[in-house]
Image (cartoon, rainbow, N blue to C red; front, side):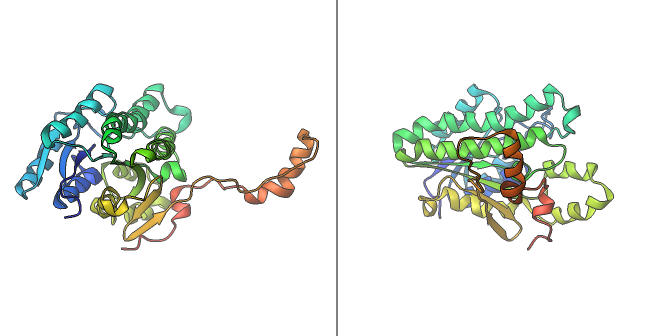
Length: 304
């Protein structure tokens, strides 16, 4: 079993991708704290406790798991869930930051509440949980952080300024964790998963007639298809893989590039606005990245 003897926490693991990752980790021998606050897709409070259902499934299959209902947006709750891994299983080897909500709205109608709520769960929540685990990872000289990003941030989508900003911020955070903790044997990577879940299900309501076909294609992508890559990245087989961003789209695994200098212009003695305008047209415009959404970059049917 690839993860025998390892233990960690998966956030937002009561449903969708987080659930499938937690189940896959348990099947491979890991002990798992299944975290899920049970909130609605927009973060509103709910009486549901899906984490307990996932724990029951894992225990029924002979695995080891305990439930946690804390909020990743809370510094104290994040530390408590990491300590729950240690108290229940004696150690912590990984954290999977999967918890998320959406409040999609066109930018000029987005409220401060819409912005704050999404950034708190995705970006601050990812920081909170990874930061809670970092001292223990550092002390033991090993550990793995796996964060969930999205092509909404890597490429772009309409009506998701809050979500896109958080998800691209997670890429920067992942790279920073990888750089800061590499000397302690800790690695950090990110996955942008394509799957039909509660979050992507909200796209159907807003889809135009022209977008219906893309939505139908998304429905073919299962949440469990991201789990094997998560298992690999948390296993010792990936001990030298860090700071990378992957996507899973059906049977495809995609490695994303990261921003690097593309073109440059030089003018001895400095620039004037007029000279810049000329240089943009002559030297830089050919390298402009067009305004695109995910379906522009992935226009073909998912390979299953």
